[in-house]
Length: 223
Length: 309
Image 1 (cartoon, each protein chain N blue to C red):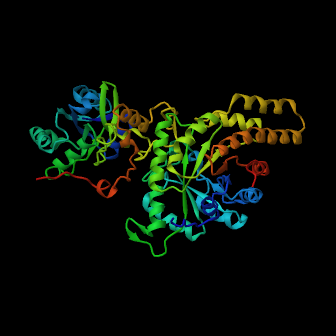
Image 2: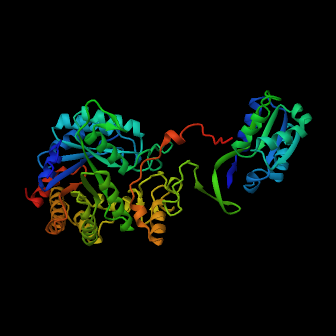
Image 3: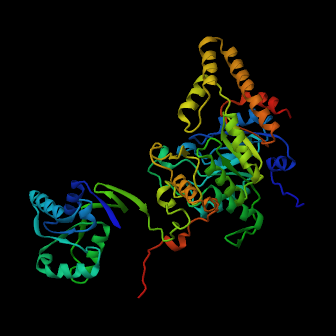
């Protein structure tokens, strides 16, 4: 599983930093998902350090962490460079949105005054075909239907996330959204279930998603 | 045999097995419905009801529930309120269904709706909390059981709920199974997408006959060559036959007198649709016709002549 990110326009990032009058910036780069997406990793850390310096910022440090989104590891990594953290009046993360929030939570007691920014936009939970080709295949809806839909997710592959597709916007197996270039998710499901000899599953009338279970601040806490 | 409850002229005619004709009205981006009401009055003597569209192609228009109510009131024509699940969540839709009843609306057509991305407010959030099948299920729970999610409605609504079907859909098998879901959800009538291909229509209607839902065949008589060409070009998944396009083009190019042009277009529509409809009726595949040709009310006397009652 990879959280797919893309780069924000540079000016937007600098604007956010300037808006907080940041001068001394600590760069925290993700060595896993963002590295794969070429929005973080060692290269990203070096690239952003240069850019910041060119714009007159002081880079207090630039670290690459394999666990930006893991509070425990992030705590350890930041503790090691606490002197640099102290000198920083902003942290710029090259990660997904989890990285930003993980750092805020980790520093909430020791350095609550330091704002944390991101250089990236978080796109989706993605499947990697190869580097530079990432596809959304799961929206984390909390109610996995794959066992009933031939392993193809209607919430993700149907532009309307319908539970009972295809809709009238399907033409020759293609979807009305995006000018009939992308496959209709429900036709993918139909073809797959047909292949498996289980069109009875396709015929099933499905209830709407239960948003009382998935629409709020979600957490998985089992201990 | 259980007595079928009817709440509208449309429901009553379908229950009696009368062969019916419905029309279509397309309110625009306006607060003034006078043009639509005028059109409704023109078609009123010929149709049992007219559909009122809900921001087709995702292009925002006056709200279809409000328009349905106002047209019914001003034109004295019963309407089929088209409701898409695109813009409102389940909670909102349930409220609208009660509101629609209170406003005198007795028929609703359940539609998915064209995606917001296609229209003139693509930045709008697409909702699709329900889909066209689960909206039918919701209406039927509210009407038949007098409840929503099991909670009692003090004075429940009474509306007939219809579904759309697309005989042109490829693969057809998926569409047929989808109609099965809508039938299971409780749809009381079906209005099809526009058709021009007789063989395909026969195949499709024969396949969905097992669901025992009355079918109104969607047709689109073409008012002019421009209309025919535009329909062929811009409506995805529906092709106007080449011979029709050629015939309509010849009227445009070869007939200069406007009045004569109109008469010829009307006659050619009659000539094309009469055998088409007759053949399907002979095979006992239809409960009626749904004419989607908006702004062409003068064709209705001819259609009435075709269906013969």
